[in-house]
Amino acid sequence: MALGPLELMVLSFPAEDLNDGVWATLNRLDRADQMCVVDALVVRSDQAGGTRAVELCDLPGIRGDPDVLSALATGLITESDITDVAELLDDDATEVLAVLLEHRWIGDLAGGVAATRGQIVALTHISGAPSPVH
Image: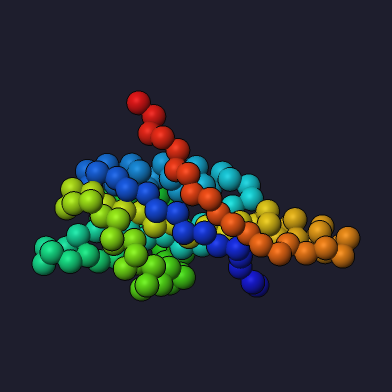
């Protein structure tokens, strides 16, 4: 089965709030009818001053069904993606959740458009992260 289109969403959390942030993010995305999480992992600083990726199922104390968390370790987030995500780490007190999302609604739209002999010729994402709620 073909996937796509895919979008990599990156969220940062204070390290002490990571587990709650992962839970809140995945819980909300699980309820999104036309989006599907196809891979997710955390990028964090390591003791040697570098960064490393950690699969959600390997995070101690993470909330969620272990089988579901293991199923999210698909490897679709590439080493190149991880390198780019690691650049977003502010400091050792911040950890980053990378979530690869499939936009299923676009496939549904493409089918309807194709039925009228049309085609989707471009998809452009305009980033505009929402402002933090205070």
